[in-house]
Length: 135
Image (cartoon, rainbow, N blue to C red; front, top):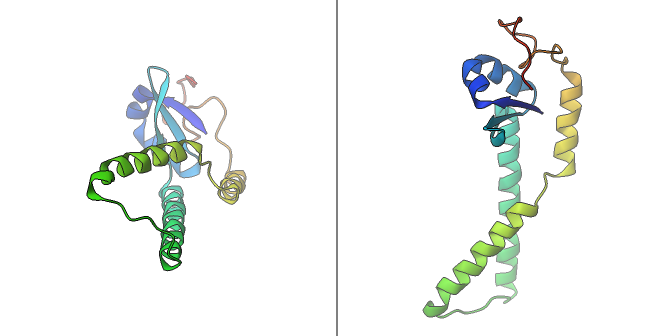
């Protein structure tokens, strides 16, 4: 994974896109990561994983309903319930790593791609070959 400053990302946007097709690129502002640029394929893959997880959760909920495993709530209790659900969601989103098979697939794909030319910020398609890599 490459890191690039927001200034360099803006100045070399085309190169950023070329690199993002090969590997994720972390964009930093004032030394702090603020965004990750990934290929459309990687983005679609992540969305598919999220959709599969959501469908699995829905299936579990439906199965619970069919087996009578549910709780009736009064209207006054709903705000408290919503807060508990939101808190649990925030806690779960911090802990869930990518599935191992996804990581392995990305690693295998990265090994098949030709490595970037050393010393260049965004690979070997640079029109600014005289500029050193700031990373």
